[in-house]
Amino acid sequence: KAGVTQTPRYLIKTRGQQVTLSCSPISGHRSVSWYQQTPGQGLQFLFEYFSETQRNKGNFPGRFSGRQFSNSRSEMNVSTLELGDSALYLCASSWKGQEAFFGQGTRLTVV
Amino acid sequence: DAKTTQPPSMDCAEGRAANLPCNHSTISGNEYVYWYRQIHSQGPQYIIHGLKNNETNEMASLIITEDRKSSTLILPHATLRDTAVYYCIVRLNSGGSNYKLTFGKGTLLTVNP
Image (cartoon, rainbow over all chains, first blue to last red; front, side):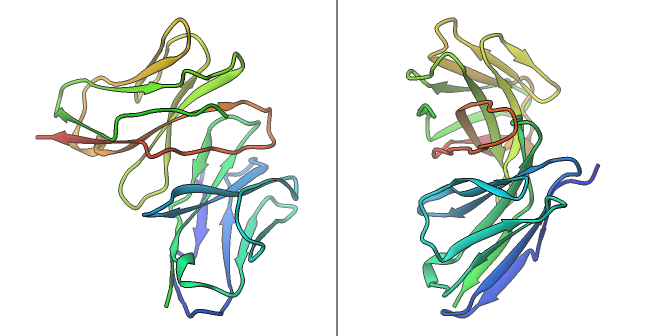
């Protein structure tokens, strides 16, 4: 069974730009959640989607948004990028609320 | 979700058992204890979880005290590849939705040759 796939793996963007990250969950998993990891703040929950509906949202500004498609694939978008948005963005999928399986992440650098 | 307390770092000799403690004194009756680990620059990896009873799988054993206020993750024969940050997380199993993990700072386990 293929694992969680995140694309791209690395990304460099300029301040003020926007970015879209993609996550393909494990086949059959309907819950997809997103996390941001920085050296200062550690791993922080962004939001979670289940059956195309956002079920839970972390404490992030409205510049961070996401969506989930009918095939459970998910995207997250960050608009008006700031230097502080540089981070490792991780996606995780799960089945029926059990253990979450994480992708390798997308390393975003904002310059 | 209940908060957890873990030591910031631990060392272990290769081949020996690594015992990683976690305190979760405010855990409620229906909250599970989950363990994940993160090897440098990779996504976190699920290890094991449990509610009341001790659990064992191919990776590790989880020992939960009778009062459920603390637990210990045991890696029976640590290898260099087990060097990672280990996270203890307490959460509800909510049957498919509202999946959220609250990560603390974890324990950096260093396995030495």
